[in-house]
Length: 236
Image 1 (cartoon, helix red, strand yellow):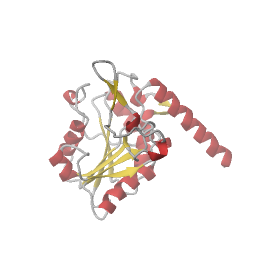
Image 2 (cartoon, one colour):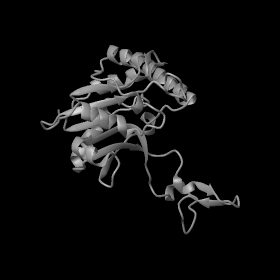
Image 3 (cartoon, helix red, strand yellow):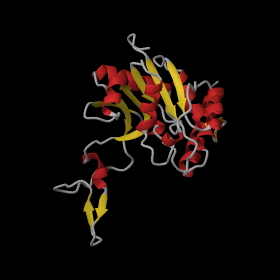
Image 4 (cartoon, one colour):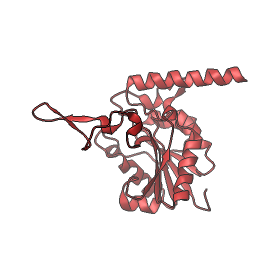
């Protein structure tokens, strides 16, 4: 609870992952991938309730074992490849009304920590914005990106009078990292999006901003988590 306002956290996890089959419950450094998100969410000092939205019975059982509630089973038409990501969130809010704020925690961000979750919630309140999302510095600046025209010549993605050649001179930009989304429930039901012109940003370091989408992402996160755990064990 925050300022006497209730906070609901939703973890969406469907069973039909194509890039990495069954990735949400695949073992990552000793725990199912989804367990890393549940564990950090449960540490939050603001979240009142953590629920899973899934149509998959195996994912549901794993999530329950690690402490997430499963108050409903997601309809299968909301678990298709083409289903917009916001639809399961809207469905969950209609199933569980009367929460003042909603936090979306995607299970594909295992490096995210509770300080990021609570920090994003706090940033929303500090700025007075109806929503806040986590961002990070992109590895490659869009000012150095190009499209290829029909004649196969390159064209800057962002029009510039002069191409900047030194990174220090580039405008500072940020990209969504998919780790934390927070919004006032009434506003989200109205706009159907966490991203509007009034959304504030919580900046996360790149080291906690990995979003698992490929096998390489999975292996990299596993390596980093094991390295972190080994370092912590040596300090004890």
